[in-house]
Image (tube, rainbow, N blue to C red; front, side, top):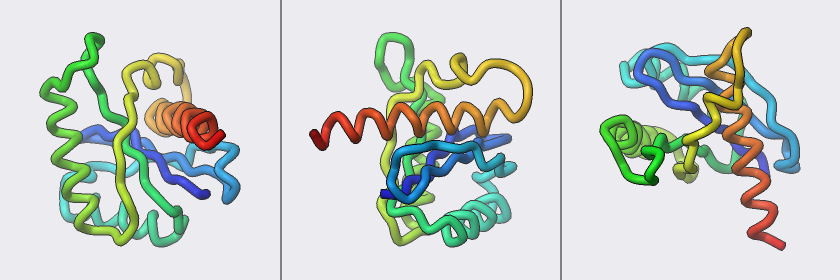
Amino acid sequence: MKVLALDYGSARTGVAVSDPTGTLARPVGTVERVGSDDGLRRLVQLVETEQPERVVVGLPLTLGGEIGEQAQETQRFVETLSGAIPIPVETFDERFTTTLAGQGGDDDARAAAHLLASYLQWLNNRLR
């Protein structure tokens, strides 16, 4: 299953996509200001181009696992995105993906790729 992952941020959103088998994750790039009409339009075009079966958005829970302000903003974005594309959009705990992405290059896209790799591993374990 091909999956597209988003590391949401109001200024920049990292994007990663899996291969068609749902095995490998690769960073794609970033979309600026996805909360704006232009940003959302660019993201919808990317979804149309990549043709994933679902979109996964990192949910930045607090270290205690609670929903803070950033997670609430992310949930609002997920609702908007869900209304703009015809495939399922779900959230996945991303508390540690930005840290794992490291420094250099496109950190937002790399964080999305780490999020996607974690999600694919979780999904694979769940399906066994």
